[in-house]
Image (cartoon, rainbow, N blue to C red; front, side, top):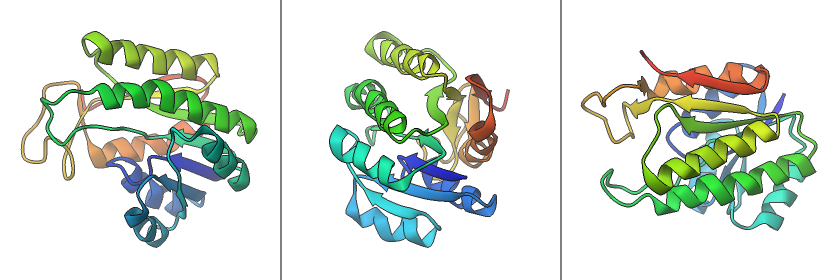
Length: 190
């Protein structure tokens, strides 16, 4: 399968790309940072430089790749866990709408998007609800990850509160979602 991964240079995406290659898929890896292009190429993805907020460029990039599946591993998280998450709320809302529109324009047969296995408070929770509604309305798959721990996460050296999942396991559990029926999949240790 041809798999377009938006957010391929983020903590799950960077692990997902080599798993897709290993499983015989042909991934494109989208990033908004030019410095990540060589790394994505080395991992076996066709690198794509694009900002998810440029809806026209995103649509053109996804259509040009001709994916069977589009996977959204998009996040915009701050370096400090206590910092505001407004950018990530925008990513969940506007970014998800743009990626879904691009997937539809490309006539991708399947859509998978990351979410969380807990309900954040306030605007963050409302953004999660909107992301999930958008994906389910499009007959896609929502993957609700537990709090990530392991290298490159907020919890490199300790376990977060449940629900939680090691970042490598989160990536492994995402591969079967490419062929899952529409709905919600929970990926957590507990």
